[in-house]
Amino acid sequence: MSPELLRLILDATLDTLHMIAVAGGLGTLLGLPLGVFLATSGKGELFAASAVNAVLGVVVNITRSTPFIILVVAIVPFTRLIAGTSIGTSAAIVPLTVAAIPFIARIVEGAIREVDQGLVEAARAMGATPLQIVSKVLIPEALPAIILGLTLAAVSLIGFSAMVGAVGGGGLGDLGIRYGYQRFMPEVMLIVVAVLVVLVQSVQTIGDRLSRHMNKRIRHI
Image 1 (cartoon, one colour):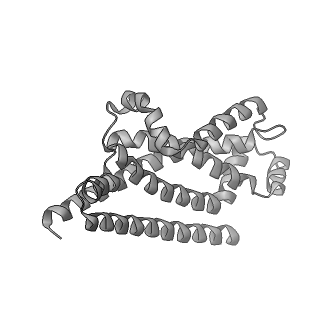
Image 2: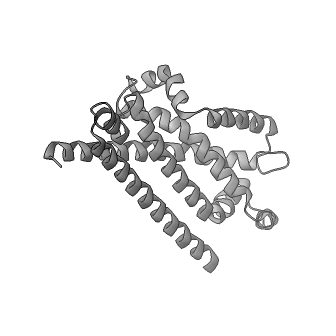
Image 3: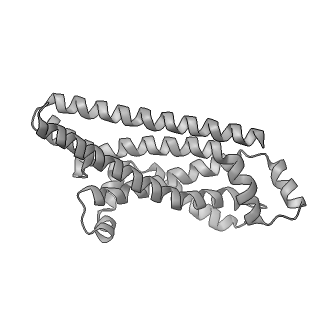
């Protein structure tokens, strides 16, 4: 492997990690409260607002059901508004974040709905406010499942980040297309795939271990 090719692979890997970290962070920052609200705003729930819940549910479902490559193209004007361009690593973060938010929201919603409602009723009986119930009961109890869900989201973002390479998004996907496909260098494509596999395995292993650790802590409390 030539030094130039090694540098390209290293730079592309760092670009991919940057996209995943920023999009995953922003997706969690916005998707976590959205998921909590979706799980607690139904009729008779902590923050009862069934009409708002229904509207947000539809929006989340529409975004989630849109194929990612179509989403990337569909929100190009929004991407240009936010990032100032529609190509490159910074631009790719916008559709990655838009795709991550509803995905993470549904993961969080599902994890919170799995929490034993007896704990919620006990907290209510002790006079806890809805916000206290969310912060002291629901999120801590759902945390292992949320971590596993966020791990799944990160793995999906790795795949999406490779996909945006098809539209000039930078990162490993872009490198594989420009060199592995367009310049007929199959060894580059193989290296890109190998690096992506390592990234996925690393993220999955870290997420699994962190989830098990949090689950043990909850059981000991």
